[in-house]
Length: 395
Length: 144
Image 1 (cartoon, rainbow over the protein chains, first blue to last red):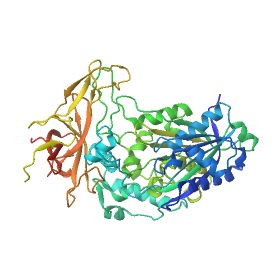
Image 2: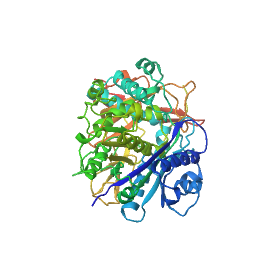
Image 3: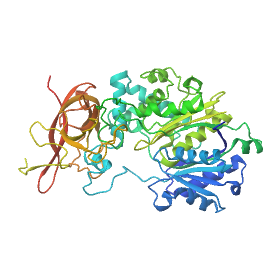
């Protein structure tokens, strides 16, 4: 029995720093996805929202908030919060509902309005809160990405030029994406001239936070066939597995890793275990993948993900990059949407935006960004506290 | 220099001796170490122990990775005026099989570090209050 569901529609509100209420981005994305699917809003019987915690009360109840904004029509709702993996968990909830036979067609939507500057923890003396501890000791979000980047340099010989080349690649392709926030083609000189944030990462190596929204209309394969869309791209796998103890890489917001000192305990890197379940569920391997949308919170992190997805052996992603293999027209194009480098983070929307890009690519509708003959795409992203996701979409 | 007394920035996370140790806990059933201390439930999925002893962690280890902070973090970080960038390292403790983050002592930059270098734990000023000087653990290269 197939565990697949069809993607009938995809929609996005352009990313930017618009400063509006996040609900309107979600509504715009949802309406575009509905129109794209050719599905009337009243036929949607499940609304699955990716939640955000920074937008006050309505953000916490995203499913209902978007259902109300689109006009109450009696659909059931769900709200998922999993930091950057929120969108994938919302998609998984919709898939479960559809595969259980309780729903034929669902809307999955996430949107965010982000504040300016660092996201600071609550005040006081609160050593039980890992977020408070690390900020008190001077460890911010870029610290973690910089630690990973530096490790690549010392272990694999990656260079600052490699990291800059990721930014140059993503900005070049992202300049052709009308939904991207940053559309300028940056050069390696631009990256080198930007301020150092956390050595070796400069301002232009690290993604910004943005406002944006993304939505998908998903359905049972039977419903898709009835609509004459039996050939629509399908969600073939969703992995949202947590790490396996002992997690060996120090992850935000922790100050230390797990200890692997106990008998029978091995250290595992979380990022590299995430896609394994996705590949297994889809019954395919990395060699079948035509393109990948990965979470380039930093330029160097894109290289980590390429190896975590097993698109290159460990330590060899930079060689792939230098060879042009991860550019459009290369062997395995990565982040042809422009990635977070061009979008910036809109947390509850980001994982869905990745699936939107794969949908357009697999339909052959990506215009100047089109990966020729794309049949299988994979996404990867990671949030806080063991949240992460990897989604496989195929024709 | 201030003659205020020294006090730990976070109470009970390290000893205050000249050769300080981080204070963690160890599960009495499976031997897993925890830092910060965990005394309520063991996070090893094969262990359901609720019994822990307080232990001093190894005070030397190898650099896992390193970076610096060029921008002033938000509160609760207390920044000096003007803000001075500082170096940060993650250090792998061999016996405990874990990586612990911390600032690196003043005067050591990223150019001085390399993955695999041996570091030791020291105490250094984090910030000053009206009553005392708050110190915390920092990593320092071991002179070779």
